Image (cartoon, rainbow, N blue to C red):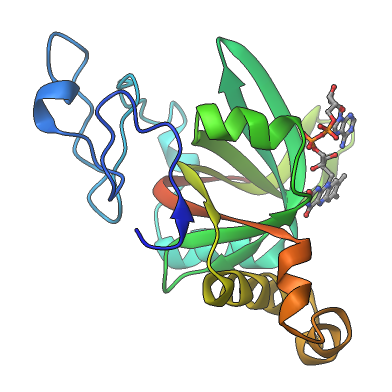
Length: 205
Ligand SMILES: Cc1cc2nc3c(=O)[nH]c(=O)nc-3n(C[C@H](O)[C@H](O)[C@H](O)COP(=O)(O)OP(=O)(O)OC[C@H]3O[C@@H](n4cnc5c(N)ncnc54)[C@H](O)[C@@H]3O)c2cc1C
């Protein structure tokens, strides 16, 4: 994919995020074929777990999208050599691309981990309040799995930052004019794109 840094192409991952069939098989647990909505990726295939409380699953993609659109940040989990790392990041969601965009500094621990292992899992929570006296919490939440990449070309970065601003800001145009006055501004930010491979939603009323 032009303009993107490619990370972690080991384990049979290919350019479009899918894996070659022979790498997926070979005695590993079979991953249920519900990854067909978008780009697919498999690292060490994890068997699909169905939600234990099936009545709580949000099945409509439009409602999952509503949760993603209602929030501004997510907890993004990564893993390197069996060691987990989680950071909170603001995001921009685009349903058309089935992708999320992020911005960050040019270096740091999360980028180092993502360069080695681009496969991530993230969660977004719409907090509907603790139910005092019931020891329960009302929420809608989303879990996303997918593959993160750095967007390196200027048009792609500009697009990613616009998606991010449109998601975050009431008046994205004025922020764009102020913070991205010219092309050099794009060199100051690293833009990440997460292609969603699997997404699930859950609610607790
Ligand atoms: C609501 C919210 C929104 C944020 N949005 C963004 C965003 O859009 N983009 C962005 O780049 N960052 C954002 N951050 C900050 C982000 O969580 C990380 O701190 C930051 O991305 C640096 O990560 P790094 O791995 O490069 O850390 P490094 O600077 O490399 O530092 C790594 C070390 O610092 C510790 N550390 C790193 N971050 C945190 C933290 N947040 N809290 C406690 N310890 C930490 C780690 O345990 C690790 O030991 C946001 C944080 C919050 C709370």
